[in-house]
Image (cartoon, rainbow, N blue to C red):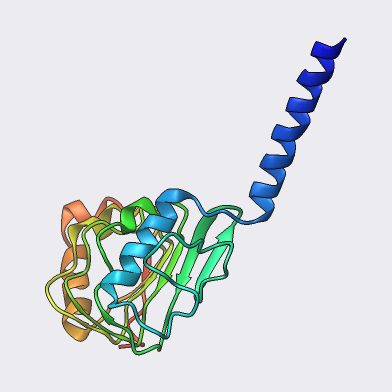
Length: 179
């Protein structure tokens, strides 16, 4: 009888730990790591309140511009904040992100090849990116809206669309009005 009681007690304890862990919004470790790398790559800007390059919790601490569903980051919206630097190198681990809006900042360098794989909307308009469009954009099967970051990028998208390899997955709208 005592053994059954201890078993029930253990199950209740595990259930409470799970419930309180979920309520506190503990962010998926891969998502948290990718956002910390992004923060460092953006030169740790003060505009990103609550953000940290250390072990903080993006979903549980309501990081600016971050939307979560449960423990997963689903949107990153950081337009018009005067951010500089780059996007980092771990974006591909943000598998639940469907919207990435980094428009109207001062981001530079190349667009990372490894973007979140389930993006539906990508807005990089009015930044200082150089180089071409990474081929990986053609592999984003869920992408519906792409707002390019410059006139030359828009022209490059047009050239990519006409290539056979790109049209295999072409199904998104290119909005050219914001650049």
